[in-house]
Image 1 (tube, protein in one colour):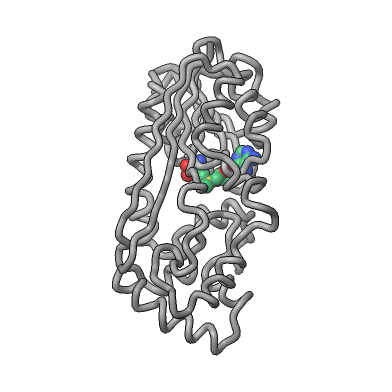
Image 2 (image 1 turned 135 degrees about the vertical axis):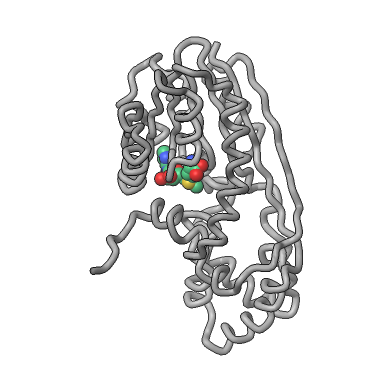
Length: 293
Ligand SMILES: C[S@@+](CC[C@H](N)C(=O)[O-])C[C@H]1O[C@@H](n2cnc3c(N)ncnc32)[C@H](O)[C@@H]1O
């Protein structure tokens, strides 16, 4: 029997993010546990509250919230992926917690299934980057929150460090093959200019401005930029993973843009650096937390 085809969001979170490598998945989830805890700490989630996690994905933040709201609290999982909501419902049933959860198929820009002023906290992690109308999403967060309700979000600010210099490919040195690297990179880029790309066309100042415009009177923002050395990684894992749900895997990008000879040249140059863990990579993320006036 063949496995059912997952939608692109579920396929990425459950498979393509870690290239099917269980060890890589464990490392990713270990790193993200700290992010989840900070998002929930900033929201000051308390027992008995109702938390809405927008773009809940495979439940990283929402299941953490479920522990914090306790037996009298409720967590609403909202997402545009029915596959991920089904996945989360199965996990919640296994935990015996499905009765304290709601699963809502809705985009951040239109949370109509959730009534006005019925939620204490809205969380969201790495979701707004995929939302075209982010201002509208903030209005929706404000609408569903009770007066005094809080938002806490985390977003990569991809504009920092974009574009990479042409002699770098995800931080690896590619000077001698930069013509090939440029073609592989282009396979993962959107069609339009960076400014109108939902993933690139905003930064931390926009997040603050949208929160203010939607009526969040008290606002806090932390921008964190890290330049870290790459850890050694298995080449097969890197080949089969993609950096975000909308991007091809490295293997797919190479197949779409390089001839077999070029693929061999590209691989011969990059693979040893990946396996030895050379070079550095940059991440920039914003934590925003705010209270509705
Ligand atoms: C990178 S994943 C993050 C998942 C989860 N928040 C986490 O922290 O692991 C992006 C999530 O956003 C969801 N998503 C994409 N577009 C969305 C939209 N317009 N509104 C709400 N969720 C969306 C995807 O289905 C996916 O679950």
